Image 1 (cartoon, rainbow, N blue to C red):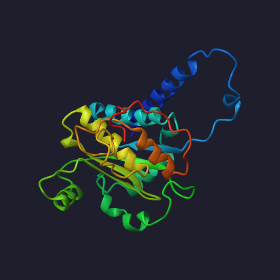
Image 2 (image 1 turned 45 degrees about the vertical axis):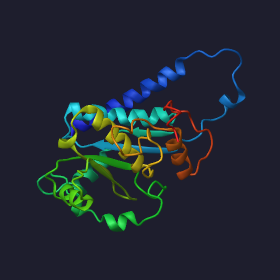
Image 3 (image 1 turned 90 degrees about the vertical axis):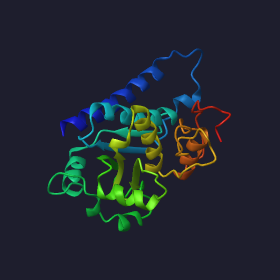
Image 4 (image 1 turned 180 degrees about the horizontal axis):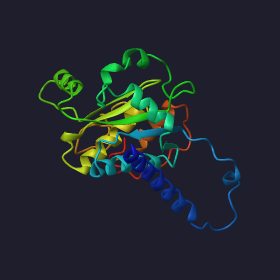
Length: 241
């Protein structure tokens, strides 16, 4: 349990570091009146619990994916450490009697049917779960996909249950773990696959999908009821569709 707290706290530390760098740049001339206004609320404020079965090598790109989304959205999407209640909830409802993740125990169909999973009446904590290709759910999903395609991860974002399940033994390197987590975080916050943007992290076709495009951010903002001030993500403009 200490391990996931350390990992998630590292993510917050990195986010604070990014914020300090951005705030420390000196500005010339008089301040813009708009800058004196109260800061607008974040688009999505969430908490994340990373299952302690991940190794440090596996956990680093997961944390980096959190940071990348925060940077791309100028802090409008934030990931904070879990509370003690989040930890208790995980231990009680997402583990079986032997301490293994058991997604069969969750009433996903009923939970997924509830509206506005990121609304005020829903839990804003999600879990990052470590599964292997031997897990029964992974075998079922592989069979459903057919054609020999193996699933790398899957996401469920309901009102009470939210999780990203990573098939860890299929992550051949840290970059694949990083891009996979970036993609699944997009799904966690409501984005669908984006097949029209070759470079979009929501394309889902590796190794082509590599960055968060402006369209990804635009879609995310519109999905959550905000259409203003879409930041430039720095993704290749020739592929940013």
